[in-house]
Amino acid sequence: MNDTGSTVNKSLQQITQLQQRAIQFAESGMVEEALEAAMICIGLQEEVAPNDLLLRAKLTQNASRILLYAGELDYSEKIAREGLDFLQTAEGVTNDDRAHAFLNMSSILYTKKELDSAALILQDALAIWSKEAGRDAEVAECYNNLGRLREEQGRAEEAIELHQQAIDIKRNIFGDHEQTAFSIMNKGLALMLSKQFLEAKVTLEEAIACYRRIGQYDSEMVKACEQNLKICLEHI
Image (cartoon, rainbow, N blue to C red; front, side):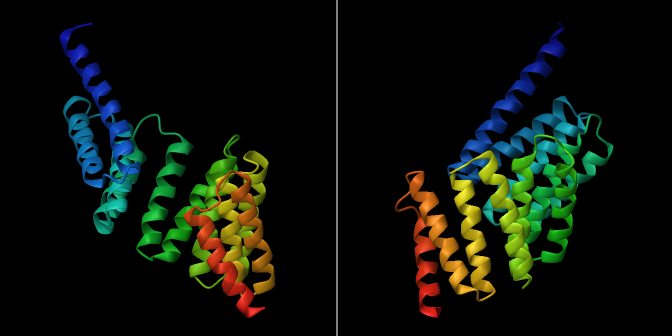
């Protein structure tokens, strides 16, 4: 391998390491550090592999997610759209790549309260993953997110059904799990929104029981369920 090829490979390895570090920073709440690492990744890619548009798209999507955590919503949307544009012309793009980009954009638009647009692009992601084998977890995430969107759009009955679909899938693939409990809780909140307080009470109790079966007795999610359970009891 010549020196140029060796240098490019080292830079690509550095991008991979920095990308992982950016994710770790973001998960730890170190948003500024995460964003700095993500932007360095993009700069390195432009320098050593400017024609790798798929890599650029993925790096851009990652940066947009970090910007979303940071509350920089307009900038987050701007570069997420750039990432979608790169996917249009990049070589080797898979349906999974597109679906993840759509999911990311829907989260940004949801946060910006552009609910109709968020729902449309989320349905694009759902349409892709529904046809792909082994993508049940992603389908469940789409159902969950679409349920939350429908709640905010005042479409509580539709939200309840979407949350139930998420619950059914998560029970099948995860069993008792925080993801399962989270969707059960979301269904309970949608039932509250539709003023079905008795059904909401039963569902929230089910969510609490699920959380406790996995050892979460005093988590923030459990406290949220208990607080909403008290509201239900006041209306029964």
